[in-house]
Image 1 (cartoon, one colour):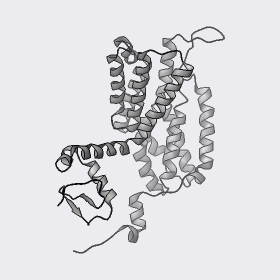
Image 2 (image 1 turned 90 degrees about the vertical axis):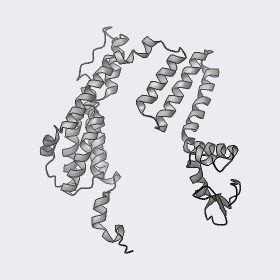
Image 3 (image 1 turned 135 degrees about the horizontal axis):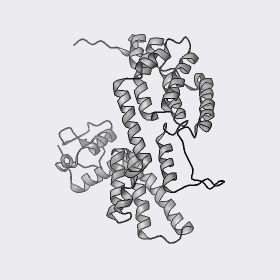
Image 4 (image 1 turned 180 degrees about the vertical axis):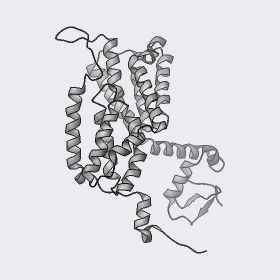
Length: 318
């Protein structure tokens, strides 16, 4: 065994940390394994400089997309701050930086969404960019509270399987792909008009997968239309999409008025239905026409094994 020399591609760390010469076919694979090891394990066999370089390589390779996003954001903000905006205070630049880092954390997905958002608000408070009253304003919003109640309602319906018998009756046994999609998208759009679309889709996915097997239609031809129907149906009422409720809350908070009459804008539950229903109809018609051409027929893993046993099964005797 020899001490580790990372620059020499003919020598890589063996499993126990030692190096062997002349037994490596792909040094890059071994180097990638080294980069994934904890720093403490690397430090037993390598110098501090080599360990730091390996961990930096691992960091940049794992986060190059987020770093590129931050670089582009920094360039755009610098150009806007020097060419378009009036001179900004350090609080404004710090707010831009915190928002960019929060977006980067959301893109990376290494932290839960609520943790990333709470960290951003906490950073704003720590630098006195916002006051505690401003930080807590969102929790007192009527729109946000309504979204929370809708999520609780949707979760209760999902856990109790309250809609399963109704859906089983409505979907039945279609004889063609078009009939199956019609039986699926119309109830989905109606349900998502009164419940948040995300829990609706989560509740329907296992049901649709089992239903597709029973009627002999590929699930890939059903899941995407179901998702689109849920999104389009959510635009027909204020309750269907959380963004609608948030916008209504903001309009009430800032006393937005009708430019023609001067009266405060009123948003009833079905106030956007005249716009949402045509949007829903056009979207569903387009989807039903072009689905056979745009969606490939994919079978699940169990179905593939059953229909192609020679390709997917192996027998070995030891």
